[in-house]
Length: 345
Image (cartoon, rainbow, N blue to C red; front, side, top):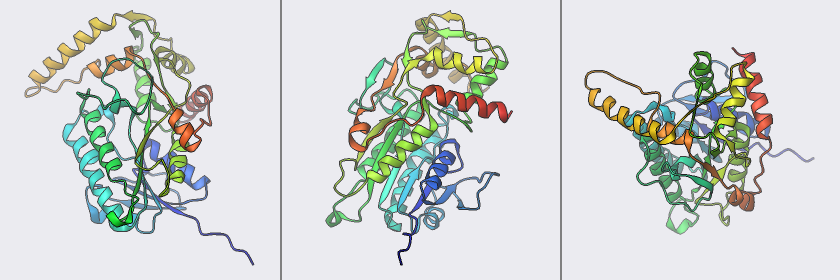
């Protein structure tokens, strides 16, 4: 009598965060057994998931969550807006190195990193950017700086040759502009600003094209890449852009989001270069005054460049290597996102 094969086991590092919880849902729906490791545990827990709470920089905390896992998905990272150099280094660099060592010690064979398209973004226009673009030099902020180091650590750890040591196959996924239900950063910030009348401005002419990627397309790309990892695979040790593959004007995304909640779209144009200069000057003033008072400028050089430049990326490599194709259009993702936040506010 035939029996079903036992479900494969995955560990999701940072599985209680925005992307992590969607990854968990994707894995459960795909028949995987799931373990979640995070510094905190969500209130909306699931009985079919085994939860582990701990510090990513503590190997003993990590090891128990990794035992018996076939694949590890590494989503843990402070948000880019945290602007905390020591925190970024602790989680993205020290934590990732600790995770790599723990995977090897636990016998994990496959490690999938959530990197970022920002690792190649230096503030200048990127149009249909490919994965062979050089890393940003110099990086625009601490977040980007540590994400570059993190990605290098993970890809350099790739080893498919048993004669050189334990096998660990790695891949890095570079999403861009993730949005969707349960988002804690992008959508809530925009909506709060719109509610307070602060979403009136368009930096530049508003025609710059960017990628915004629905979260379920991101998890779909992660799983395809993970399942393509094997010792003879071209995927091993590679980085891949994952987007909705339908870039749109930056202001188009903002406008659709705020209009969906009944707020007026941005309409006042601000000259890009003047606002950038002001942001740089304000940054210097904030730094000079930091011993006395903490100032968090609304317009930082990074935010101004993101809002006023082209930055969209090609997914052709992912299409060629593991047949990636978005499963939701931008319009579908936006509709799902708006409905979720309306239902939960």
